[in-house]
Structures are given as C-alpha cells and as structure tokens.
Length: 572
Image 1 (cartoon, helix red, strand yellow):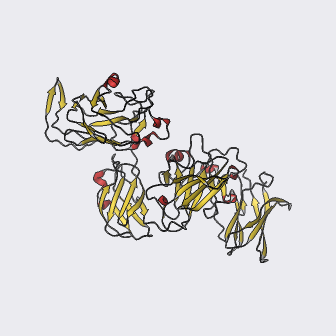
Image 2: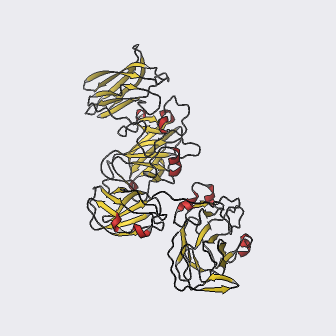
Image 3: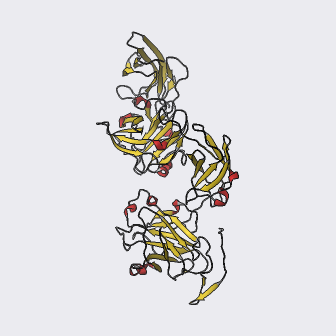
C-alpha cells in the first residue's frame, strides 16, 4: 500500500521513554484512521448514552496527538495523548471521561457534536492536513432497526483506506458498539473487481457527470486523455464531484444539442485498489426531450416478495428520445377512491433513460439483485420510500405533474392460476406495448428465469406477430407450463381505425367452448388478447388441437370473423 508522505522535518523526540513522532513532522495519510462513530447513542443499548468517535493507529510507531485536531463541523484540539501502534483511542466530550475510562484510552475534547443523519468527520495533523476523513450517513444502517439509536457504525477493514460506504456496518456487539477495542464487524475487504461506469447525465449544456460504482484513483481519473465523446466533443476539464471519488464532472468545449444522444467512452481508469476499468466502457448522456408522450411504461412488478425480500417496480422506455426520470413520481392509488395515498418523487437529480432501457425501482437493490437474475448494478435505483404494494390488490401509477403516464390496478389473481404459491414471483408484461390496464397483458414470471427478471428482458416476453394480418395468432404451438417458453398464445388484432369491438372464444376439438371471457371488448387500433391455457372452469386445457374464433365488428355494421387453429402442447 502506497501513501503520499509529506515530510517537512524528519525528527523524533523521546517523551517518557517512548519514541513518538514529533509534532513538526506531517503524518502519513491514513496512518491514523477513524474506525467507529456513535452519532445517535439514545436509546442506549448498554454503552453510555453519549456520542463518541474512535481512531486507530495503523503506523509502526506511536503518535503524540498534541497539536492534532478533530473536525466535526468545528475543529477542536486533541490533547497530548500517545496512541501506540495497533491501539484505539476514544474521542469524547471532556465531561464524559468518567463514562468512557473503563473502555480504554480516551482523548477528551471541549465538546463533540455528531448529527444523527450524517456529516463529515476528519482527523488533522498539526499542519492542518487531513490524515483521515469520513462522511458517514445513517443510510449505512440499511433497513436495520439500529438506525433508530443506540448503535455505532464500525469500520470493517481498518487497512482499506478507499472512501467506500461498504466499509462501514452497524455494530454487532450487544452493547451497541466497541469503543477502545477491536470492532465487532472487523474483517477484510478484497477488492479484485474493476470499477464500473454506471451512468452519466448533463447538469448544463457543457457539463456531464459520470457516476461510477466505487472510488477511483484520482491520479488517473482526472487525465482528460481517458475520455472520448461522440458526437465529436472535447473535455477541457475534469474534477471530482464528491468526497467518495465516485463522480467525475467533465466540462466540454462545445454545448450539447438537446435531444441528441451522446456517448462517453472511458479507458485506463483504475479504482484505488489498482483494478482497471473494462475496455470500451461507455455511457450515454444528453439533454432530455419533452416529458410528455414519453413511452415510459410499467413493465414488471413484484408486490409479494420473499420474507427477506423487497418490492420492486420495473419501468421500460418503449418510445423515442431521452427521458429524465427526475421529472416523474411513483404513486400508490387507493383502489376504492382512485385518489393517490402515497406519492414519491422517484429521484432528485437527473437520471436518464434511453429507448429500450429498463429501470428497477426498489428500496434495496442489492437484496433484489441477489435473489433474482438481474442487470445489477446497471438499471437499478434505490427509492427509500417506495409506495407500499399490497399483496391481494394494489394500484401503482407513474405520473408527471398531474398527468398519469402509465398505471396498473393489479390483483393477486393476475398470476398463473396453477402456481401453488405466489410469494417471490413477479408479474411481467408480455409486451411493453400492451396496455398495462388489461389483465391479459400480464403473466407470472417463468420458473426457469427464477420467477423475476429485474432490469432484463421479461421471461414471458412475446413479440406481436409480424404477419401484418388484421387478426393473427402466435405461436401456433404453445405449452402453458410457466417455463418461460411459449407459455401463452397471443391473438393480435389490428383494426387501423378506432371504434371496433371484438368477441373471442376458444373451442376444443369436440367443438365445445372452453373459454368465453373476452366479450364486447372495445379495441384500440392495435390490440392483443392473451390466453395462458386456463379454461373457464379454472383447469389447464389438455394437450390437443384448439380453434380460436374472433369476431370483430363496429357500429356501422362491419362484421368479420376469424378462425385460427393452434395446438396446446404438454411437455413430458
């Protein structure tokens, strides 16, 4: 591990027979590191109900903290306490020393003030140089009850010096923390994965921000030669937007044309562990188009997750142009009144979707991605307050201003009837172009795909038959067993003009009607009827030859009838 060493005067002094670094020597960055933060000690779990911060000496020699400062929004002088190699020291209020003396060595300061939600903390040497800092957040507790107080945040790996949030976890000690001692979550982080460019977006006509999944090496990341933009544009400046070194802002030499999709390709970037980004890594960006007529649709929902799982709503860009998701809200609508009872802006900063893109909204992306096949870390967004989704019935909508752009009023009965249990199984739209409000547009995700496909093409996706006939059927052989292969038969109706009505029946080979549900359905200019092989009696249709009869008519007296044979196949 290499560190920048700033040596202003190399000298040591002897103090009480202990060799310590002299205050006139600037310390090596990360020689002293912050390892624990108790920002919200109330209600206490066993420790004193007082705030504290813990530091650790990673150096090979003792360090005298005389002249050092602790910063928590205000700089406060640390006392002349010697912190030995491998030793922890508790930083606490000088009025709380009797409470913490039993836990180990302490360094009392005039006062300590840590906000519950998070802030920047820093340890600075006598020259004011930050030796270590952290911007902690209460989001690091995850969904744990420990966020409510009485538990500290502990550093997992004291030797992993990248500013990574995954290096901090809520304490697992029964007392709620480990002041002055080895952290209860102590372990090792092995970073062998290259950094990933997740997305990019414009903040103005000449600035684009690149978002990465982990901290980058600043010595490499700010080199302009590592960025190539099409259509032709030249970066003239690069700098970090955040303290975690995960966001780079590029300033361009010419304005971006609204509505045009640009691409930035990055090369040679490394994380702070030395892993190099994959060749050809790129991301699209641009300035969004009109927020109306976007083609943004709900494409998959999970409202009955596993016991340790989370709901999700998947969006899909089925139109053209650039969609900025920050303009939209997700709402839960009361099924009885039709009035939104929960409404949440999806994201505050620009987040762009391009044609064919998916976006998964969930409160816990990492858990959802572990439970299913997914596109993670791409196309996932954490929405801390995702509107609640009831199991038996719910109504979810995507809106902009006061206009609903897509919605689904779902019922648990939308699922494939022969499934024994619906827990952990998503509802997938069979084709993004189908209307979300129709039951026939949805089907349970296939078992072969793991029962959900967040961020990926739906396992039950079916193309509209490209034949161009007014009424057509596809496929001609289907097997309704929920394995993700031809689980439904799709009857496509293309009238070309509004005002047509349809009736649909399914006959078995004996001439008996086994399905008579799609009665007097008002059609759009292009519509579809889906059958999953379940008859009116609630049983699965046996293998054999069937005939779909479709009647299409309008009030002007035009009547057409279509008979289309197909086969129900059962895999042995």
